[in-house]
Length: 162
Picture 1: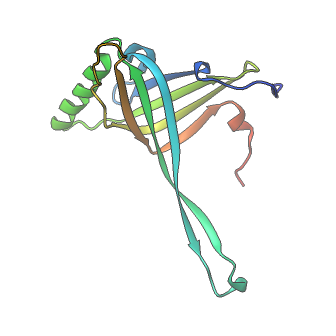
Picture 2: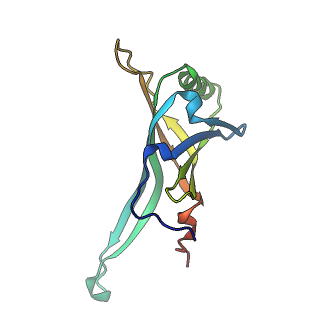
Picture 3: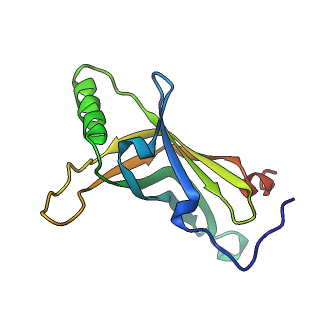
């Protein structure tokens, strides 16, 4: 097992992101779509709770996992992102409803690499961007994913399966 560096931490520069278009297998590095400024993702889980009269009325709890949602934000440097989103819209009207995978790679401070894949992703709510005289043009795109897989790194070392 790698040495854990306790006096350091990750910053955003330690991550890289690629998008895999499932129908063709084409991998698009996020950097080709603009300057990726952030990626953020939240796991969606709904708690289910019962309070039976048996077992002393102690509550029984379970999480029902319902995927992930998140956001990617680019600073515009070319028209590639808008072009992809326009193509996805046109594909929808042509009966093509394709999904993506988002692959996030993080280089840890000890040199190890964690890789995560958000699977069966739908890109939603793209913003064309706000154009101002003296500011960058931000283009956020939201996403929803069925689930996330830990491909490599510390997450694979945690044996939670029974």
